[in-house]
Length: 294
Image 1 (cartoon, rainbow, N blue to C red):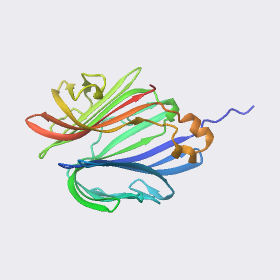
Image 2 (image 1 turned 30 degrees about the vertical axis):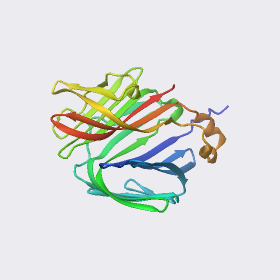
Image 3 (image 1 turned 90 degrees about the horizontal axis):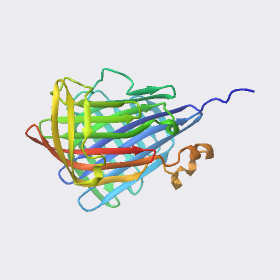
Image 4 (image 1 turned 90 degrees about the vertical axis):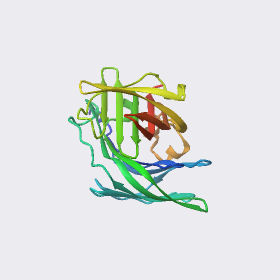
């Protein structure tokens, strides 16, 4: 009897966000491969002081390379200095340019996580960019300016074999500086990284005093290494996202039945707009907590 082969899985996801005084948004373009089955996705999550728009669409893939993904409903193109994004979901659409104010951030080790089932890699494409954005919601079109962030995730680890317990991520911008942190925990280890223009240590401990970000309107973060020790508090301005991950929604019916069975709900993803103060500066940012296998 022939041994059954494991289905090969690959994900490539570009995440781009935007913050200004009154509006905030995060957007993504991604390609997922299950064996011979490949499909693209695009997502718009945009919030102003009164309304929000959240939507994602499946898309046919027209072109794909490391620096360019062209879908039927979205197009992303990046150079060493800037990135361009356009997404048109009918009811809402955006076109924006992210001009980099900081270079991509490299780590000492790659990939971010690896085991016998596959690997996950995460790269900060730019921690800080000047953003010009045109957003259309229905008949209303708004031109916006602010700052943004971009990262790029690649993964061959099957979703149904993810060993993670929780993930904390955040990025913050001030008028003069930026910072990015990530903490990823499995049963065996904790992977933590912190980046800012002044810090030479790239792999440090990152911890949150409260187990859940949403338990209170304020949380205290601790960042530590022999060369870098500090704590700061962040205030939650508003909740941007609170949903199941990999849930069996109607939109997933496009996928083959065997894949849908494996993509049962496996946790919860929460994002927040935050205000923080440390190193005598005020920062606005986006922070995220993902809890797996709930």
